[in-house]
Length: 326
Ligand code: NAX
Image (cartoon, rainbow, N blue to C red; front, side, top):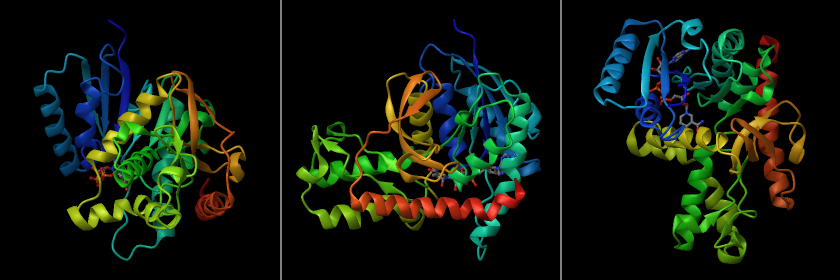
């Protein structure tokens, strides 16, 4: 039996947490041979800690053979201790009438603290995946606090957007999901993102040759993917949780699987015209477990360049709002 991987999860008693923890404990994130210890972190309020206790009881009741331990804590220094992966799901939600700048600043405080503590106490091979919104900028904030861990260890999730794009293309073309490949998300996890349909393929052919309705690709397709989160809230009364947890399983699983090519928000070094030091969704190839390289050779047409410029401008704007805090 391998040594267990320690996985710290913030927001563990939240919606996404409830859909996520059981999948990690059953082996879907790290594989059927890899034991895990779950280090569950919540806010220090009785209601949250009680809810966390209930989730931990249910995890026990599943009798997962791979689950070698559960830590429940409201102390990040305990929760992130020796963590190999830190999944930052918990964040302050946007309240009614709250300005976007205030949301960024409130979350900035959380991710500054968490970045510092992870850098101080997590394992030497620590990796971080941010889900809590605004995810890209929160990953940038956490990474900015790290002195020991390189910035490349901090990623943010755009995989839900990739999965949404694949599903929409398969539905439109009337093909099985497996026929759709190379669906990459560029930029921010927000409606400004660009699902790069000109690179995507259906049965190996470029999407625009299969779905010849260019107006649909540029308009409704991009809008549906970009605004899918809001559509789910409107329908369900709650934000996406199971699909977000599923995407995080894919994000980490594929970052641990050499050869996988997928969309991840990572530190830009100026690729594709992104400003250096924003965290932008880009296609990456996993090189060794937990490590990746950005794929740089994807072609951009005029439409793609405009979309990328717009999502880059939003990321730069978010960084401007919180830069005084770093
Ligand atoms: P919930 O409100 O159900 O759960 C969040 C949990 O995080 C709560 O239990 C809360 O007590 C906890 N929490 C808040 N601050 C914390 C802190 N500093 N330390 C530890 N725990 C903390 O939200 P949920 O639906 O689970 O969504 C979580 C986050 O994911 C939100 O920020 C949401 O916007 C974001 N999402 C990101 C997505 C993405 O693709 N990147 C998609 C889904 C989701 O909307």
